[in-house]
Length: 287
Image 1 (cartoon, rainbow, N blue to C red):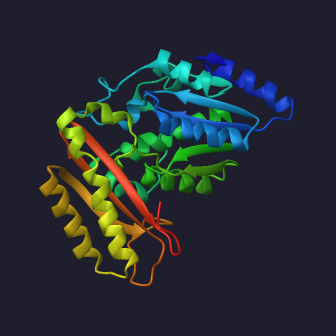
Image 2 (tube, rainbow, N blue to C red):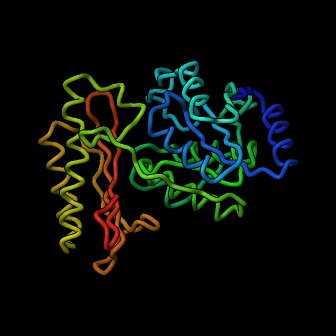
Image 3 (tube, rainbow, N blue to C red):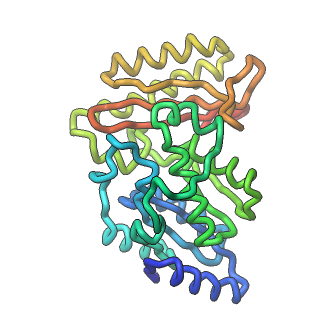
């Protein structure tokens, strides 16, 4: 596996692969990799001849009081995991390579409406930071396909909209959430949990399971179900941000006749902000 730190070196390698007629897959990450990230790599390998993974902690998507400075950076361990997973190239640029000017002066990419709901309401500017860095990385790597996890479901929908609206020739693939044996969605921020909090954390998933079961049984009182989910999380010891039922396709508010839904939640447990979701698809047990 080759490691590069500059756009010039990245493009030189990608040009060589394209010249040989090879298909490029891409997995953007912020590092501190776990099995969930490696499942994205596996999906990219199935659809491409070469796989590029980026490790870049993106300052533009962090708010002023968020954990940019303390976000775990484990590049040596990440490199070893990626090499063992069969990745062809690791792109690990410094901040100045991605943002050559101060952040306040940089051009930004905005996906309106979708970026202002759910996590975007609680984290103003977050999805502009995500959309901007993903657009830049797409321009740098120029992949044929890019793979994202469904745990960050709103992010996935934002990126699909971005690719559609900007006419980018990239196939976006989502991979189902990988979970710990007790149901907790794998996340780099799980490392923030104390042992006691870690025992409580799976209750986020269990609360969503109860709401999903009610929806599959035909309950369509969405506000009451959302309130029930909030109460369950509070009783378990969380500080809920939101529990919301949305249309799976575009995260708009659902109607009674909508069948493909997604239940999403975000909640604080100690210093960890956890997110999770479950999709309700007719004829299945969900995601």
